[in-house]
Image 1 (cartoon, helix red, strand yellow):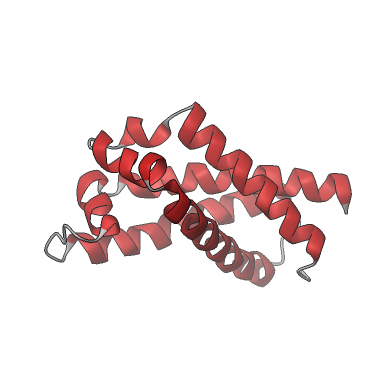
Image 2 (cartoon, one colour; image 1 turned 90 degrees about the horizontal axis):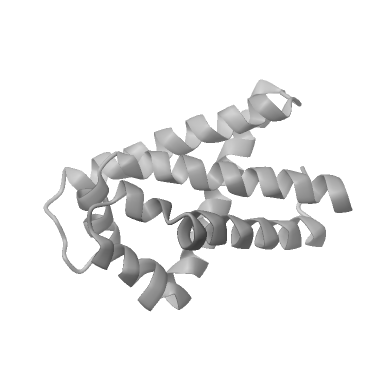
Length: 144
């Protein structure tokens, strides 16, 4: 897969739609988390800082997933989506394990997030990346 301007624009659209649907419309983080103040800090009060960071992290997760898609040589959308879900759950679970096995760092929002939601964070990320990938794939079919 060659990264072109169209792919970047499609990703930005897909990421924006995904964040809007999952965070602001469906409020999934509030359903999985037990600390609404933390979620408000991340997505409401400091969204100008953390949403761009999320865009970069999600792109890295997708690029990591695309490595496995290429290695497994699959062209079926369903298999690609399952690979993205699996690699997302695995990657987020590793981060969760790392942060929850360290003392809570109240100055680090990711430490607070993983200590608050635990492995539910992997479910959240899998949902978010699934939606973003579905929109991204659809956009690529429309305009590429």
